[in-house]
Amino acid sequence: NAGVTQTPKFQVLKTGQSMTLQCAQDMNHNSMYWYRQDPGMGLRLIYYSASEGTTDKGEVPNGYNVSRLNKREFSLRLESAAPSQTSVYFCASRQTRTGQLSGNTIYFGEGSWLTVV
Amino acid sequence: DQQVKQNSPSLSVQEGRISILNCDYTNSMFDYFLWYKKYPAEGPTFLISISSIKDKNEDGRFTVFLNKSAKHLSLHIVPSQPGDSAVYFCAAPDGDSNYQLIWGAGTKLIIKP
Image 1 (cartoon, helix red, strand yellow):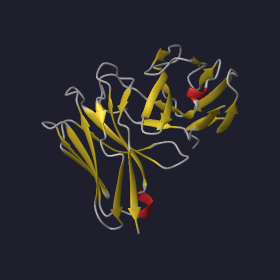
Image 2 (cartoon, chains in turn purple, cyan; image 1 turned 135 degrees about the vertical axis):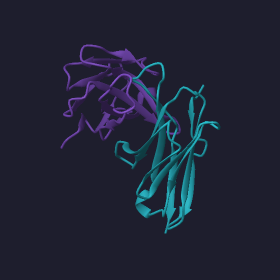
Image 3 (cartoon, chains in turn cyan, purple; image 1 turned 135 degrees about the horizontal axis):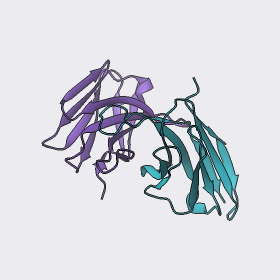
Image 4 (cartoon, one colour; image 1 turned 30 degrees about the vertical axis):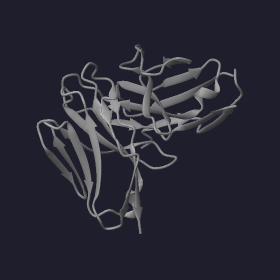
């Protein structure tokens, strides 16, 4: 029962380098998310994909791009890494049912620790 | 403007006692609230939720109370155990978008033996 799997778990980048964080979920959820967590800031939404084929900006999208490759996979790309992007990144998924109170539970991956030097 | 606020960054409680974590919100349109628990080096995991049509929801040692007039909810853990030491986040679905959740900044709970 894998749930949400994200890779890599740890990465050190030099300023200006690019990289892609991979995420896959096996729960057949329609919505997927990328968050970052910084000390004292809670979880901030970078991008989300409400359904396969759609992506939307969240609260802090600058410096990032995403691809919803298929229903299972949602990747996050840093084109030119900056020290301000040093953070813990969480991928998440959720089965969203418009108009219903249920289905709001969001499931997270274990996190990816990214350091940009 | 933070729509969901957890004003206590940390809380220390003696093992066996009650832990009370608080969360305030500003948007009266929020109709569902969730609590998540996060251990270091792990992703957050769902703990308990409450609908705005209720004022209390209980699951074992965990109870969430909702006071809509005060726009306040609280998570009670009784009795507190060492394994409860974690960061707790409250969240609410964004009323404008069913796809986004609005998160509090989290409260770090430390259970002392």
